Image 1 (cartoon, rainbow over the protein chains, first blue to last red):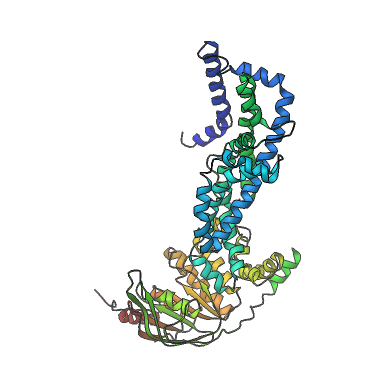
Image 2: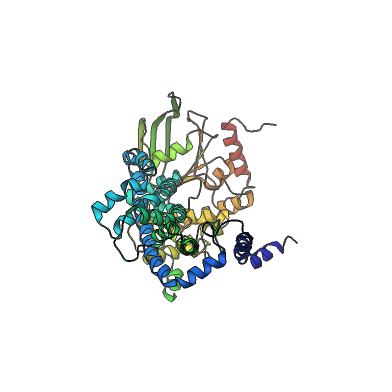
Length: 266
Length: 261
């Protein structure tokens, strides 16, 4: 019995999320069909699916815009979060100066600065990346700082007697030690990154023909195109899961010595 | 691969042939404690070890043994007295192997730090790897190794630093008794092959007698030298040798716990 348990888990583990998803969809469909709520408020899954089918081209074009923003914005967030973490790790002065500001930055409502960002950098991609990076760098910063400090306090002593310079201590001990933590931070960042793109799109005006799923959702929701808004949301939903998978894969590649990832969607 | 095998056939000891002497004269070390009061870790400690000798330091917990090693390694400066010592390398109590490096890369860490490429460093470390009973574990990650194996890799890392003096901080303290016996034999054999000046901190008096040329018995804090015992027993030594037992009792006696019935 005990021996078989992991085996069973293995066999059904892959299907569990699909099964749960199907159950929830079924419940939602029933709820809508039985007239629980008006269609303009919550369209039935079949209405969402047909909206997605008939607007496939529009949704796809907007999706590529949003996907680009999420991926590049997250990359910028990782870069900034990691660089700031290293700076605060190496300099106590930096830590004291930067940390409170980083915390405070998370309280800034993006719409307040959205127009300013557009004034600085125009209607293109960059101000949106800045918004996403601003929202997503924080978890990377916090986890990486902790990771860099997680090195055993005896380790620097050992390395000093091996004649390691400060840079070598960083390169051989602290940097690899911080990598799993930084990637954990990246996972949290990813979870908020997609909604970050939504905020970026809706708070900075754009002049492009297709301005992303976020814009589309807001327009549709306001224009009684609720099924299409839900169709776009469903795409973001699946996209977030796909990104999480990709990152988990990267984690296994980059840090094979680290413990298996908890909450892995596999 | 064939070249690596060939190089294994002709093991060359590292360049440090006999180590170098260590001299401590009236050394004192005082810490500022957490409550602001001064903590005297070492007081008037005078010790010496000749080139290629193994000096064992035994004493109760908190007698400043680790402080002593850090003074020898130059990680701390003495507050009084004189420390004269060639470059020394530390083997800390915990092995501190880096979990993301293979056993071979961990052993070769000092070579990487010295600027060798990964390939060169591995080739140099590989020569000693088989010699020291680690063959077949080159690619294993630290968590896949037993406690004894980890200590071997950590010792090899210390050895490959290429320094004349080794400071070993309770290297076998965390091992089970059988593994510890095995490792003591291993260390004696390894040092016979790769002579160095060694300072071995331990609280295992028998280990000190089996391995050392001279034993310094330290008191509880502040650490003072209670006794110095010369061990003039030819190697290899056996723990059942009456002379070993006699010296063990003498050292325990100096610690105030010999012949207690």
